[in-house]
Structures are given as structure tokens and as C-alpha cells.
Length: 401
Ligand code: ADP
Image (cartoon, rainbow, N blue to C red; front, side, top):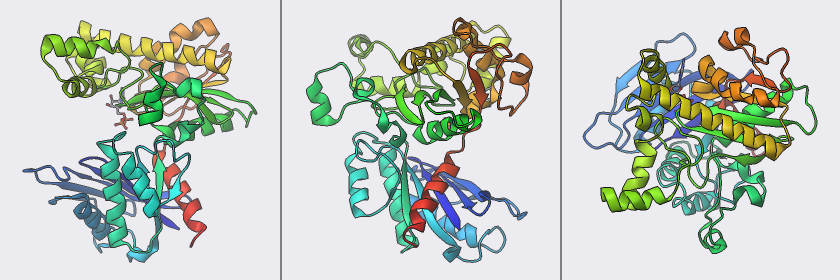
């Protein structure tokens, strides 16, 4: 069975075609600048069957044109990977916000689309794009099962004390204001892999650190999420590339009074101009920060120090939530590729008897970097959200095909 995985962002669309016999990626690509007025869109398609990469400028007024361009290139003689679209058995869509309704992946029908639409206030940038991705596929691939896989679903097992905010309870009842958490597909995948590496230990306690452009951590007990660092939106938690993470909410009023910013403008600053970019003034990219810090740039070093400290503190807090931990997992762009960052984050955790092996930590792709005397395993596990989406899609689609 071949599954198309779609990750539709507000102005971009990433895709993969995965042959589920052997779980091999047979094509992947990206459409950029969708619906961005005055700009020329772009598609890059990488077939994995030896055919040349297709890299072209294409107008994408809406997501429909992008989906159409993807499907065209998938069957094109020069760059295609299937003879006809009928070879694509199902489509899996990453959907950002599944609110409280979706605790797992679901087959898309009208009711599911209405519910995703009802959560647009919770995911104003992503849910409309995700819906457009679904509707565009339905239009050009009628009858092909579409499956929605939610970023929030894995975190729906959190207990009330993890997800209720200490604000008047009626805001939760009236508006659904609570912690939802994001990156759920990634936390689910890497925590399951960690349990596998722990030999399938029952009652396993795993802390997952998804550290990328956006970063979040999760506390996972016996395969179920019991706490996570992102909240109502992906703005909460540790500092990120451009997002502030946790801070005193009174800062928003202070910015209103002293900088004349509206609440919306302030939140925009906290989402797009803060985090390690805001602190350093250098970049949101951790590679640039490491380079600048290496050249003696104090604010770049400060940004890294603040990031490390915040992640260490969050890991430590999950020791209290889980009653200790059997494994800590690092994943995503920074977690997988930055050994120095991993070392800095783990160093203060020596108080819990946790160490990493500096040699193993330096080797790219090594999974187990646990120090010889460490009481807790430390793993580097590359995340694979697309594979999880494809697996869920296959499982759900097979029931109706
Ligand atoms: P996203 O949250 O957009 O999915 P990724 O998980 O792909 O992001 O992470 C991207 C980030 O990973 C980049 O912004 C960069 O800071 C970081 N990164 C990638 N490679 C390295 C590296 N070798 N060293 C340090 N940071 C890295």
C-alpha cells in the first residue's frame, strides 16, 4: 500500500509518499509561498527512484493548486514515482489542533471536518490550512480515504492537574482554555522507541525532549503522556527559536503601556521575535548561535545558556511528575544534531545520577549515549512524524478498503 502524507502549513505544504511494504519513502517534497500575494511559488520534488529532482517555480494561489502540482509530479514520466494516482491508497494529513474531541487519528468525514473547523480559534494559522489540504485532496482524489492525525492527540491522556490552568475555571468550561500540548506525534513515536530500547519495560517513565525550531518536552508514563510543556498554543514552555516560552503574563500589559502594543502585537512579538533570536539578536538557528558564541558573542552564549537551563529545569520537574525516569530522549533538529546542547542540558541532572558518555554523545546518530554510571538511560532518537502518520493512515484505511 502507498500512502501520501500531507503536512499543510499556512503558506507551505510538505509531503511524502511512503510505500508501506517495507515503510520506504519513495518521494518527498515541499511547496512554498502558497497564497502569498506578489510572490512566485516554488515546488521541490525529490523522487527516491533515481529520477531527477524536480525543482520549479509554480504559482500557488491556494493549497488546491499546490496539491494539484504534487499529484501531477507524482505521476509525471520524468519525475514520477507511480504510474497512476490509483496507486495511492490513502492520504494522511497532519492536523495541528484536535481540541478535546480527538484523542487519536480518525478517518475524515463531514463531522470530522466540522470539528476541525470548530477548533480554528485554537489553531488560527494551522487548522484552516490543514482543512484546505484535506478538502483539496478530496476534490482531486474522490473516494480515496483521508485520515487526520492530530498534533494534540497524544497529550489527551494528561490528568486534569496537568492541563487545567490556575485561572477562573469558567474560562475552561466556556472556551476550552487548557493545556493541549503539541508535537504529539513526535513524542508518541520517540517515547515508544525508547520503551522498545528499554526492553518493553512495564510502567516505563520516559522524558522526551523535542528540541527543534519549536521545542517541547513530555513526561510519558507507561506509554501515556502525563504532562507536556506547550500549552493552549505552542507559545508556552521552554524558549524556542523565535518563541519566548514561559514568562510573566504581566509583560503583555507592560508592553501595552510602555510600547503601545496591542495584545495581538505583543503575542506576535512573543511568537516571532523572541526566544533565542530575541535574546541574541543573532539568529533563531542554533548553528548560528553556536558559531557566534564560539566567537565570543555574549548574547548568543546567553541565549544558549537560557535555553539549556530551561530544558534542564523542565526535565527535572518531570522527575517529580513521574517519580524518576528510566530514560530521557533527545529528538528533532537540535536534539538530534547538537551534542554540545545535549551535554549542557544533562550536566545539571548529575544530581539525579544522570550522566552521558562524551564519546558516544559526539557520534552522529548514536542512539544510546548513557554514561557508564548513569541511573537513567539517555537516548538520541531521530523523530519520524511522517512515518507515524502513514502507519495510522494505513491502519485506519485498511478497515474500509
Ligand atoms: P522544526 O521545529 O521546524 O521541525 P527542526 O526539528 O527541523 O525544526 O529543527 C530545526 C533546527 O535544528 C534549526 O533551526 C537548527 O537550529 C537546529 N539544527 C539543525 N542542525 C543542527 C546542528 N548540527 N547543530 C545545532 N543545531 C542544529
